[in-house]
Amino acid sequence: MLLQKESDGSATTIKSYQPGEINISGNIYSQPVLITTNSVTEYDKANSFTDLDFEDIASLLPDGTEILLVGCGEKHQLVPAKEIEKMNKRGVAIEVMATRQACHTFQVLNYERRNVVALLIP
Image (tube, rainbow, N blue to C red; front, side, top):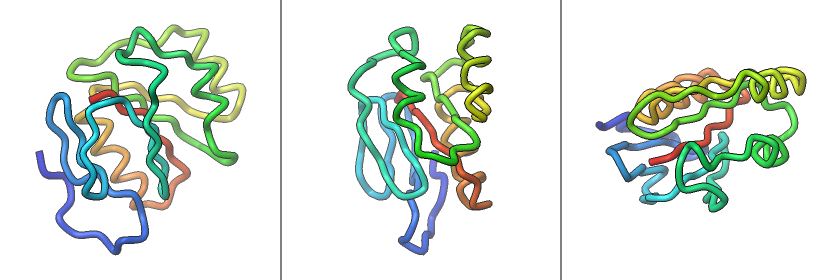
């Protein structure tokens, strides 16, 4: 799925997604990544959604993060309510969806210049 054809080059851009692979600003990732408007970091502490440590993820979020998108692979999964509550107490909304939808949502929110971070599991 092609997500965006053009970019001004100044922001992180998700070019495409297919199961097992995400093209971000021309680089292909097959492992989980944490992306912000200006950076991409490989997240090597989890290989699947069930391995995620939300306390660790919270410690990696830049100041001012409004929304954390979690792309959990091909299918939507649920985050325990206590983890959502912890993020909300930090002032961060958390949205979990399949990775394809998370890629699209990140692009839209990034375009709107929202303080969004996405953790994407290919």
